[in-house]
Image 1 (cartoon, rainbow, N blue to C red):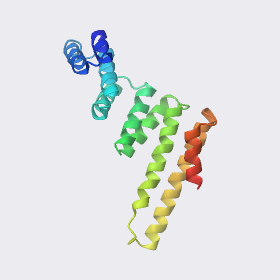
Image 2 (tube, rainbow, N blue to C red; image 1 turned 180 degrees about the vertical axis):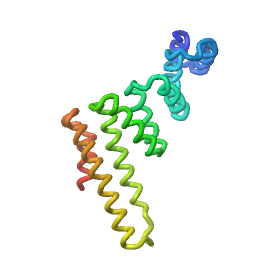
Image 3 (cartoon, one colour; image 1 turned 120 degrees about the horizontal axis):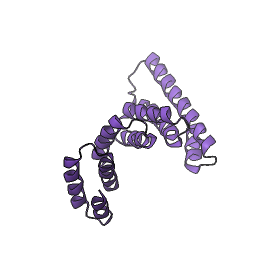
Image 4 (spheres, rainbow, N blue to C red; image 1 turned 120 degrees about the vertical axis):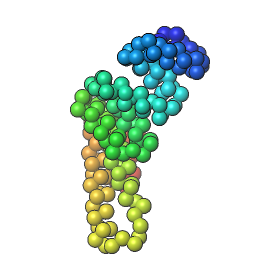
Length: 168
């Protein structure tokens, strides 16, 4: 694990991954090896592999809030909103005041409300009203989470900017 870490830190990621994989053959349940592999792939920005590794690790360690917040962020980037919601909710079940999970849920609800923007013009008035109601419910939820985040991080510029855009 250490050798792989040194190799990865020096830019030899392929060799580092080879070392980790060979060590995992000997110690398939080693959490430190799995986490090092996760770190290497995360540094590379390989989100698909990171997600697979996170899902594997959280089967064994289900109380690591950071794993779930990272997972939620990746799901958001990949457009898998339902999965991001589950990951952030798991993070909040572990730590109800986790600012990353709170902010992530705000982003989740904004993305949910944005899904309705592309509604075709051909929908009935009744359907249009229902869509607007759903959109407003999602925006209201986002505002709740962003305000909750501001209680933890008062004056956070990105959050204030996001709320300003919502209200405009």
